[in-house]
Length: 157
Image (cartoon, rainbow, N blue to C red; front, side, top):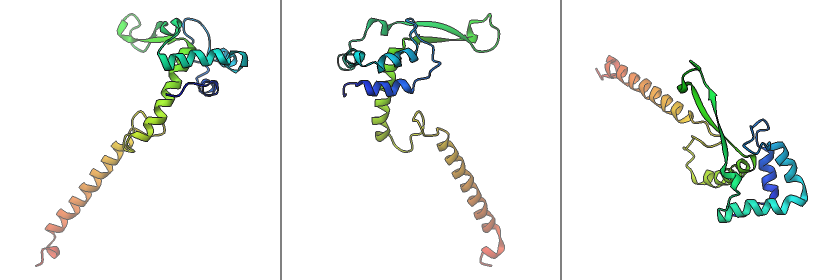
């Protein structure tokens, strides 16, 4: 895999959700993006992200997260009505965003055009709608064929 360059990370950080909650370090995407735009930090940023990518050496704070519970619905006193949410640090989320984008670029060329789930720009329900239309068309044709079989003028009499 090619090393990460700062321009690539800047592009990824621009696409990150601005209202995304930061992790334990409290650093929001906006600040991370500003730091990444500052040229004196480019070599350090390149070193950290490339080392993580090439050697699997991650900064210790990338392994930290904060878990909080989000209320869904129902009785707030029951634990089943909550779901866990882990908040990771923004620089780690940027790394995973970068990896995900790279994988999607390659895998989109390797997956069938009929694979519609979990691929941006494709609609997962499309295959279901196509199957439904094919079944309806087959039923219509079957019905027409049955009517013609029972119609005296098609019986050759």
